[in-house]
Length: 156
Image 1 (cartoon, rainbow, N blue to C red):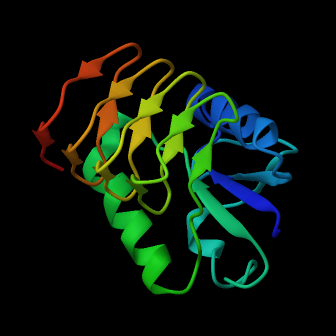
Image 2 (image 1 turned 45 degrees about the horizontal axis):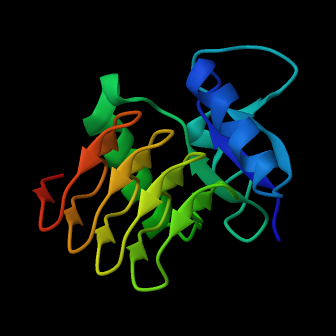
């Protein structure tokens, strides 16, 4: 597996780096346009220059206060060849009949049931339950302990 670069070094980025490690992934460092520090390896404009798509996978840790910019950056980097693997905590339960999109973050205790589709770049916080036959649009955050019953559709 390629090492991960976490885009965003705020508290959300720190939490995502822990999720990545608990998923067995190696975090090389952070990419951030405003923060400084020894773990900040680059800015987003360096992706594709300093770090080529084949060298690292990416994980998005820009929060819901910047949803439009988050999705635009995600799509731009994916189209330039970077991979955003989903990170699924080992204590989450995902049905083998569910689909989890690229770049999704599924925290501990989350439960995704059969015939559910989770769009790209979604975040399922701890203990979120997404029951059967749901459609969750891209770039959506499902709150901690939220429960979505069957046949729910949430837009992007």
